[in-house]
Length: 534
Image 1: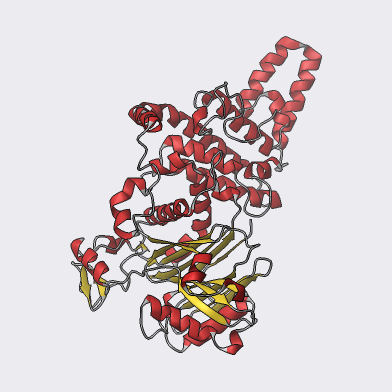
Image 2: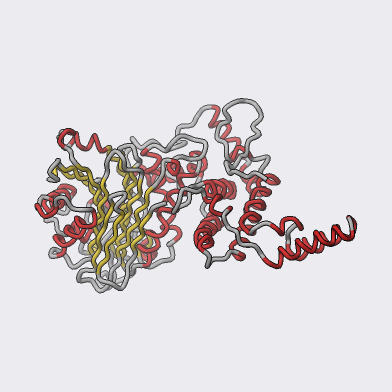
């Protein structure tokens, strides 16, 4: 799959682009002592926005998963003193832009005419989170924090020494006690509807772009409001020098225009959107305290988001950090029109769900050995993987993600198993193959195990059956494989063993992977959706 991740480097500025999908960005350190901004951009497929065996996720459901991703990243980085803002926007391929916001990075939708003159700008995030805002100030104070000169202060530390300019962030362990949280504000903008609200005639639209920026860019606005941010971007884009530029060229020009208004790091990313544009994720993360958390989030957000989208709707809703299980804090920031998945299930399906919940504790005891088995198999394969080979370099991140899924302390063992098999079925990030198919291409063989296999066949042919049984036992004791498995490549063996786990342990739990059988007849298809054929 096509993606770009930009993390801070020792150079004072950096740029990047993807011409095929009309994306570009530019970042500068400016007059700060270090660069702390990071960026993630990734092309998605419709399949990655569709849980296996279910319909494609709706814009609100995508928003829910972004909300959970930000919370999960915050949980994983809960011991970090540094923090980061987050502006993550997903385009669903159907004309909808879904944005999850923490702190004061922003994203914009821009319409141009046929001559490339800007017709109108809409900030995608309806709010930013700063402690000088009335609602945020009240929330911080209610949670035990203090506001000092428009900044968050810890009640036990002199605010002259230590304070924070934003009221929400991923990370910032020290300020969590002072009310800083990672509960995102969500916004869904339909492009056609936005044009109508801006009174732009669709016939006059020649180009549409999404532009994401950090607060270093919006510092240039005289009024730190939604309208003020829209006006400063519209003003900059009105310069004739900004017309007919590629994404990276425009990003560079916008950074230059904002540079004289601030000393802060400045990052701008530009993505064209037209009828051929596939779904994409664009995230901008402005670190503070260090670059550690912004870098962490930029590296993790794409994989985590696709992992969340691969979960069935019921599996998603059951997570500790789903919006359903955090409805109070979710509702405090987000409109009631965002229906929560699973919140109104009061029919026979809900009855079955309650029965399932009643036995969940007993089931977890059954699922734990499965998780441990899959973890051991994956760990063993990773240990034997040739990481220096081209195929090994592609497989290693897959195994890392599988191990992360199985070790995730937030989700249940049952959900770990489902997510494990779902991820194997996902399309690989750099090509059109599924992850399981990438592993199948691992042709590495253990020379010693191959020799054991040859010895077994020779002994079997020379000494007939009984001695070969003894040799077979010795081979299994020495290699943890049956003799004929010694001829398998490492990839083939891993796939086979994972398939055996499914066959031996999961045959009673086919409901994991089939949300609703199409008929009442017995379902004899492979429950994981993986192509395990031997």
